[in-house]
Image (tube, rainbow, N blue to C red; front, side, top):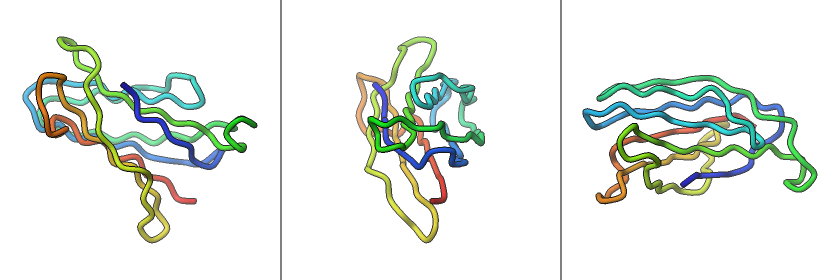
Length: 117
C-alpha cells in the first residue's frame, strides 16, 4: 500500500519517521515514479532525510507525485492510514501511520512529509 499525493515541482521536502515498536522498518519514498533513497528506521528509533521533488508531469498539472510506503522484513508492506495534506503556517504536511495487517491503530510507525510552498 502506498500513500501518494502531489506537491509543487522542484520543491525541497523532508520525510521523518518514528518507530514505536521493537522491529526495524523501511520507509520507501518514490518521486515521480522513481524510487529515492529509503529511510532505514531502527527499532524504537527516528530518522529524517531531505529530498527534492521532481519536475512534475502534464498529467498532474505540472506537479510532482510523491508516494510513501513502509515495509518490514517479516511481513512486507504495512497497512497505511493518512490524512490529506494540511497547511500550518507556511508548511504543508502529510502525516502517515503504518501498522501490520493483523493489527489496528496505525501506530507502529509515524511518517511526516513536510514542504514549504
